[in-house]
Image 1: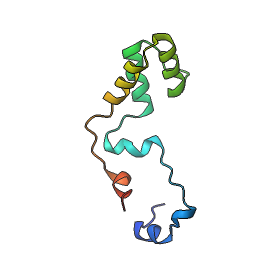
Image 2 (image 1 turned 90 degrees about the vertical axis):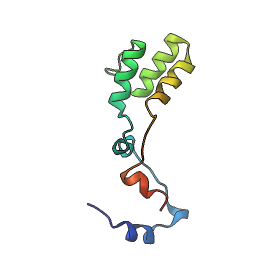
Image 3 (image 1 turned 30 degrees about the vertical axis):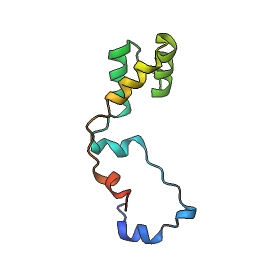
Image 4 (image 1 turned 180 degrees about the vertical axis):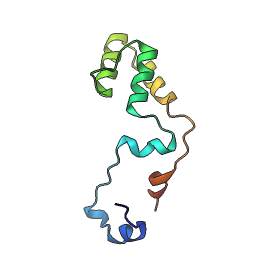
Amino acid sequence: MPIDIAKFVQDVRPTKTVLLFGAGSSIPSSAPSVARLQHHFENKFGVSGVGYSLAEQTGIIEQTTRDRRSLIEELQSQFKGLKPTGAILNLPL
């Protein structure tokens, strides 16, 4: 159910508010989904993500390759060129 942003802002009490966004909130800004990241890591490092969370898969990659830097660089490469859209643009408000 959509909420009017002006009403939402009026009702928010910052001292009693915790802002949580799931990974899906950045997908409209062209950020990769967890599935896309896992597929990318599988292709790059040869470690399947099937049956594992992203955290578990990357933990296995880190342990088997002993190369955390490459893992981080690959993760960063998947977030280049993003343009914020949708709910992400409302954060500064």
